[in-house]
Length: 200
Image (cartoon, rainbow, N blue to C red; front, top):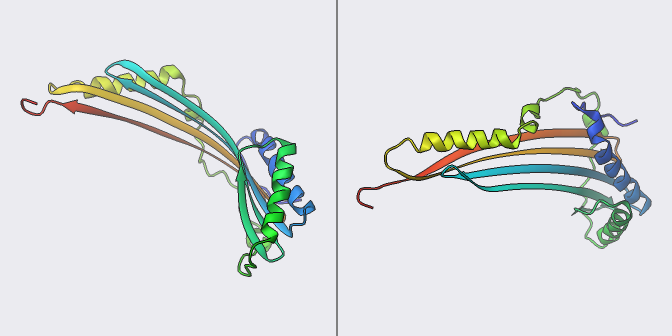
């Protein structure tokens, strides 16, 4: 069995890992000597306020898969956002054939599995659960607080504030025996103000 990296919530990466494993299996069946696949998903939310009025809320989610192929001394990397099993199989099989047509690249070799043997399985704390629990009300409250602070200056004409956050998960699987999962979160908050400049 391949080694695996410890995840704070192993159940959440099952689907991503299954997609990565499937991608590698299809690549090998299509004739690749080795393959390394990463399946990922991400979600981001941004809330924008201007002068105490909600101006914009944007939310986006995405899923993708990238695969590196090693075929007869040749190397290529491909990515897609269509993770439906039937479509993914055809995409990878075609990618293997395209790789056969490339120039030989003797310096492109898959990682020697001895390099990751016995690696530490530790939680790196890259994911903050408090960020994933942010509610629309939390975002609005923070924006309003920044607007209020920016508007205290007597020369303030207008002020805007925004809060954004993101979550991402990535599962990697390779024919050399590696399997791992990574997740992370990010958050940002900021405000800006337009001020009177003399008589202008």
